Image (tube, rainbow over all chains, first blue to last red; front, top):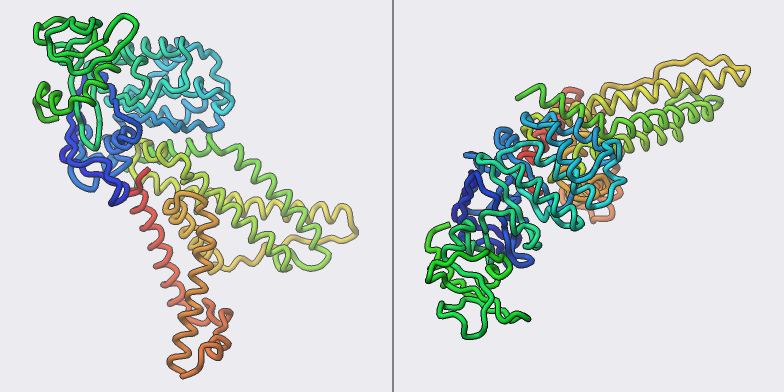
Length: 281
Length: 238
């Protein structure tokens, strides 16, 4: 669905964001995009949506050159940016304004998502809502468009704890086999039970692009004492219970993925991770 | 190209800023009516200098409103992601800027003046009759060109497009005058200050060139800026 090949992108000559970046994303997955501040997560989303143009390489989204922003592509992609656009319209009017552009927009779904987010009054103006409430309305709208690709930049920022739970519930309802959801975030715990694939971005290239199943097949996440494992340790973090470690999964034990530990392990063992997940992204 | 997409874009505009436009329309009627009443005892409407200035200022205001409503840079990303083609966006914006906002403005001017004269006749002993302002076709073309330049600059500049365009136009005029002065000083062997005194911008008007040439130049400028807007809309990044 989205294919990036040998992408080079720089805001200025001395500020290269991506260099020979390759990434392939397929439908039926909820991807989590992780990276340090300034790694280029938002820029990557914009390049996929055709809002930024790579200086070199090719970006194919839904079989089209993303930079051309063809209507056929735009109809099936929705980009929920961190900087939300919320005009001085009621929720009802907003839908009246923008829903006609999306052929598969489902009003019942929109109402249901709003209901789950506990927003019942659609006559409220978007400008009168809090940041979190605005976000809930726009997330509901984005999901109700039923586009094949949904790009979300920090969608849980500004949401309170119960809303984050609702968000996960709604997202799992909206996910389907023919849909690709790509979420960029810093708040790894918000997506923990939601994503089924992880993309880690660092220094202008993709360090890891793997499904959660592949990750737990090759890596082990466990709490142990200092000498409690014979497997090669990739990352170790001391805590009250002992040490939380990420090791290579030599004995093929199934453990629960911890994205935060995975991220740190990947950052500290780039070469080894590349060998373990040996493939071209 | 899909006509439904253009209609949806126009509907979106009316839903989003329709109320503001109605408010603007009513305010303009009120201002034009007041100005007509104030200047009526002095001269015929539209021919007094202060009234002309007010008419011009409000015209700039409506141009600014038009470009803000169509290409607001602070929501550029959202606008670019609306699933219609750049051509459809360009056409809907052209309809809004060249037809809708001009009709809104001229309508307010017309109603305002009739209202002003009516009220003036009611409260005074005069019986003034409304005469349509003498709108020269050339003036309309110049307004359209000005709007075409504004439409282009609004998508070219990311922030404060209106002020930047006014400044850019001003700088361009100064540059032309300097170039003109240098040209005169070189070919007439004068020093720069003598040459500068020969340059009179008021002589450089559309009347000093043949009608057909003036029309051709203005048409080319109009087409050029519209084409640039369309290109820029296709290639702009957010």
